[in-house]
Amino acid sequence: MLYTLNIQNKKLKSSIQLPGSKSESNRALIIQQLCAGNITIENLSSAIDTEVLNQILIDFKKGETTFDVKLAGTAMRFLTAFFASRDCNIILTGSDRMKQRPIDILVKALRQIDAKIDYIEKSGYPPIHVIGKSLQGGKISIDGSVSSQYITALLLIAPTLTEGLEIELREKITSESYIEMTIQLMNNFSVEVERNKNCLVVRPQLYAAKNIVVEGDWTSASYWYAIVALSEEAEIELFDLRSDSLQGDAIVAKLFEVFGVETKYNEKSVQILKATKQLPNKFEFDFSDCPDLAQTIAVVVSALNIPAIFTGLETLLIKETNRVEALKNELVKIGVEVNILNKGSIHIVPAKRINSSNIVIDTYNDHRMAMAFAPLAIVFENLKINNPSVVKKSYPTFWEDIKKIGFSIS
Figure 1: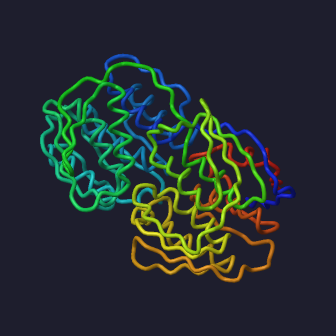
Figure 2: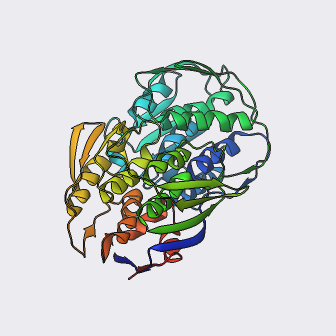
Figure 3: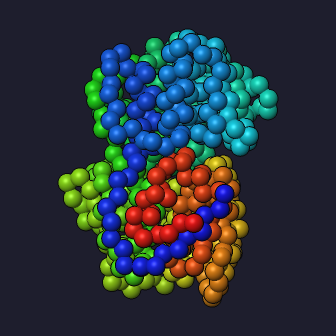
């Protein structure tokens, strides 16, 4: 399937109901299963990743033993630790791409506390066979530079272990804001996490049963910030976002100030507006704590002809696709050069913009590629997005929502 995007009116005004945060939802679902009492989760994300995780947890209660996470990386990581600490005998598999995404760091960490996990096909990668049991816990040492989801998976089960868990984080810690989100969410359910630099300690505790209302998704909000940044005039209200957000990607409001986007916080929403502002001569930022914003901002600086250096992109190499290579491949189509400096850094060199229409953006089965590039329809006529249905992974109503502000899709 191919979508062709156009927009006639570059003066935009609308109100948008964002999906619930996928990151908060997935953590809350695991906590819900680990809590002795009942937890009600309101505004649960409609993302396919969350639906997959939720359905697997339901099916597990029914006694099923083989589970397919499809493309849901968070589900694969969280469930590996969850099942390892439950009394079960299960197979956990996923899509072809999931079978290329490493899980060995997490498995090795769990094996340090006597978890029984075996590889079925390629060593270090799904699918896996988990023979779960009650784990004592103890001390774990893990590389913190690859994925914060490994650390979150361990933290979530830690209070249920007989001796709790002490986690030593080695190397540079990536996506630390997501670890902090996990800790704050655990705190909300009355579980204390002690932190001393690169050491996390969780003693045996009980999750307190209480209800939670999931906040709107700040990563999804980033695409609206990009639309405002590229528009002539815009005022968009985004519901269910908070200034005191647990989400690291809430930094998008601060980042987009340099691109002329103003944020006003209301009681239950934020308003983002196009402001008159001189654009910077260059842009540099370390995305280690918010890697999911990198694609969106790469497109924005490219469209605004701002040279940029991005660092902290290591985790993008093992996402739904190699996002660094994907960005390089697609930005060249609008005359932008992307130089890969090392595995975690890129230099974006704007070129004289191609005066062209009918540019086709490939999405590589990656939801964020589709949504990050969609705002370019404000700049290029007949912008085409290949395989647009990939947005269902995190923001199923994205295409319907951008129609509300005047995008035409054919």
